[in-house]
Amino acid sequence: MRAIDGRVECGYNEGKTKRKEIHAMQYDFTTVIDRRGKDALAVESIGSGGWGANPAAPKEGFDPIPMWVADMNFATCPAIPKAIIERAQHPLYGYFTPSDEYYNSIIAWRSARGYTDLDRKYIGYENGVHGFVTSAVQTLSAPGDRILLHSPVYVGFAADVEGLGRTSVYSPLKRDEAGVWRMDFDDMDRKLKENHIHLAIFCSPHNPTGRVWERWELERAMEVFEANHCFVISDEIWADLVFSGRTHIPTIMVNDWTRAHVAAAYAPSKTFNLAGLVGSYHIVYSDYLRDRITAHGAATHYNEMNVLSMHALIGAYSREGEAWTRELLQVLEGNCRFACEHIDRCWQGVEAAMPQGTYMIFLDCTGYCARTGKTLDDILHAGWDVGVAWQDGRMFEGPCHIRVNLASPLSRVQEAFARLDRYVFCE
Ligand SMILES: Cc1ncc(COP(=O)(O)O)c(C=O)c1O
Picture 1 (cartoon, rainbow, N blue to C red):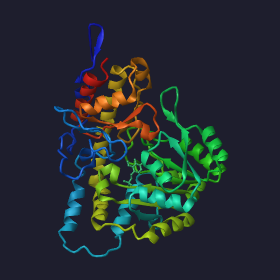
Picture 2: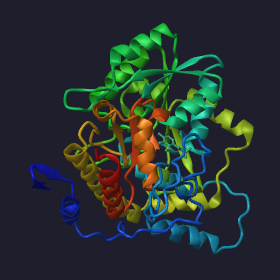
Picture 3: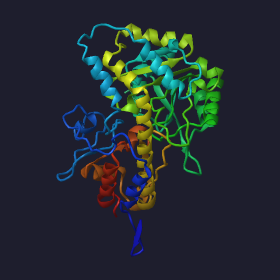
Picture 4: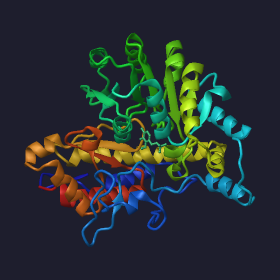
């Protein structure tokens, strides 16, 4: 950063310096890959209107930089295409049952990440985490029921809940003096009581704030749920994407009560960029909860695994997958740090808490709008016009917010921020 005529220059040398801090990488997180024509919603749906509030197409002269849908603009770990191709080369794809290797891969991966006594019988395939959430919502609540969630909220939960004829009740997260998003336990307790709520959807780590809940926070939250006889659907799809100095604690592992009352969902999709392959799974220790939820999925016959997705998971949850994930995390954390430092220094009135995991940042533009008289729509559209395909935060219950996906090569993130400096946050 340099001062010019008393002004701060918001240049990009700082990003390049950061890049040097990242140790020599074995895997490629710098190549900018053209995803056009390769089944990529993140690219192809820009400008299509469609699905809620997709980013509008850029004006001529600007190429789109996808910073919305939660997938990554990195090639996945090479062990995954290798596993898929090896299986695909055996040209019979008949009915199958998930292999021992599939269950053992999940047990090994999750046991290295917080589970102490994971057993195969607790694990089951889920056709997407949404599939699991909707099965669990249907078995653990009745139409007309209210369900507790935190806001900001992952947009998909709201759709799951409302789509099933239930109502979302939000307990807002609040930023503390240090700017860290925290749960408000009193508010949760009050809302559960006032609304006679007995089911919560809990997101850990939390999308879109990037919070990785600490043990004491999980304990307090679970105490509140226990006191209100509330089952918990714990969406832990982001569990592997946790930055340095943080540890993801599986909700089920918190205490004896959570073992009996929490149903959790995971997937290799966020970690390894496999959403297009579909291959999530549940971990449910309680026989009662598991039987009820799986009976629902089984009754529809829609909850069947694809053999290539099984092999993708086995390739992912491997030694090479571990090494690749370690490098990915350095890149994601570096990108988030670059973005947050830049925002802090250059965009007066915009606030973003440094995420502790995931690859999302959630910009609060309230101060900026108040200072400049611009609206959130002005800012969003000004970004879309110059190809920054970021996402309207109102869908996530952020009234003056924008969600930004930073899972791209740093050069693309820097390019996006350069455009935002020049054309958007430039009064
Ligand atoms: C918290 C959370 N849950 C679930 C999903 C989607 O899961 P799936 O693609 O397995 O249905 C996402 C995707 O962004 C997410 O952020």
